[in-house]
Structures are given as structure tokens and as C-alpha cells.
Length: 77
Image (cartoon, rainbow, N blue to C red; front, side, top):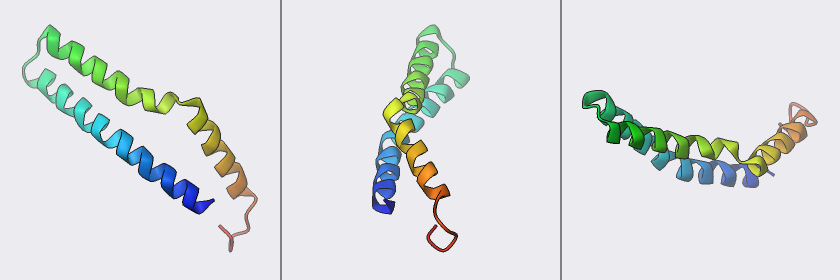
């Protein structure tokens, strides 16, 4: 199970990293030189970033792992 979790985390980082950077760059551009176009770009980048956290399958797997971890002894955990 720990290999599966480690793989999930690595994949999550590969997915979220570029989206996080993109959103923050767009937000910076909006903050330093606002325009309707930049506002729209920042909103769209934020939506792409937050969309990652609405994946029902990922949430289900995280809950399963958390539930399984609660059943482990301190030594196993």
C-alpha cells in the first residue's frame, strides 16, 4: 500500500505543480497590471488548479488509505 500511496503523491505533485505555478503567475500578472483579459486568465487558471481537488476517485482512495491506516498498530504505521 505504501508504494501505491507514494505513486499517488508523485503523480499529484506532477499534476498540481505546473497548475500551481501557472495560477500564481497569472495572479501576479493580474495584480501588477490588471486588465479584463488577465482577470479571465487568472480565474481560468485557478479553476484548473482547483479542479484537481474535485476528483471523486482520488478522494475515495484517500479515504480508503486513511481508514486502513487507522487499523494499523503504531509499529506498523
